[in-house]
Length: 289
Ligand SMILES: Cc1cc2nc3c(=O)[nH]c(=O)nc-3n(C[C@H](O)[C@H](O)[C@H](O)COP(=O)(O)OP(=O)(O)OC[C@H]3O[C@@H](n4cnc5c(N)ncnc54)[C@H](O)[C@@H]3O)c2cc1C
Image: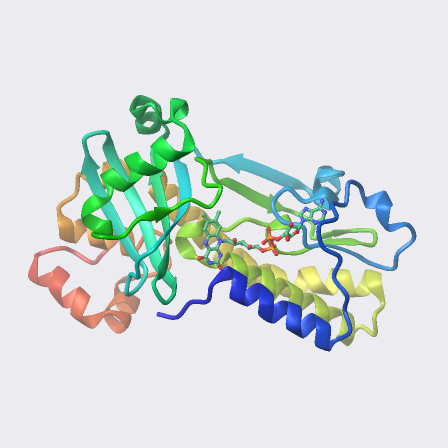
């Protein structure tokens, strides 16, 4: 398992930008595409609420579906060995935490529950500090001596965003502005970086002919991107019913979890995780779908 903290990654990207002679402008919100004036190319790398996309969503064929589960994104001042999922039955109902180390002594700790449990638990009426304390109590066994660290943490619902067209005229979208990928597959940053690499490839290999390059970008990027985004969507939908999956016995539950993105058939599973599949078979769990 390897990971890098968001801040460390941003610092590395800033250093690289400086080497290339790029001068980023910080703390300045672009309110409209018009702010750019005449430009050869406008790259909308402005995240999920992209101004470039939301100014004309129909140009990009953008569609957004809100998932119903609630999640809250904390840090934790303790270190988990690897990506770990903790599904717990608590006094308030069923909850899940996705937790993983991002640097020495620090972890990401995302807590998730269904919309119904969230409402019944009364989280809508709790302030930030009480929410953090209650979440700590729910996951006390998992956290041990660790504490949850607030980072403007608030309950949210995850938006599944897709765009039929990656570009319109001289505007092109990349990263979260173009697509979301549920955090349960942990690939959002990778996809954003791969988008930009593919865009640069398309521009360079088409001699910076913008219309030709943008079409080439979508053509080259779409199949690989779609594979991951589809896997992320299937994974997200598995989590939408995680409380029902928790009714399964531990081994069938583990199989259901590992297969949630729909990319592991029995053969692949045997190849990638022989010890795990041996355990499943020893417990009489069928690997056939
Ligand atoms: C709970 C959760 C956990 C996640 N965990 C992981 C993980 O472990 N690994 C992983 O790879 N991904 C993870 N992701 C996904 C990841 O955060 C995103 O996919 C990634 O940050 C997308 O990068 P981006 O550059 O496209 O957008 P962003 O990181 O959102 O960056 C957009 C930038 O544009 C700026 N901006 C936006 N609007 C404007 C404006 N109008 N004017 C000027 N600037 C603007 C913003 O300030 C920001 O700097 C997680 C997401 C969530 C919700």
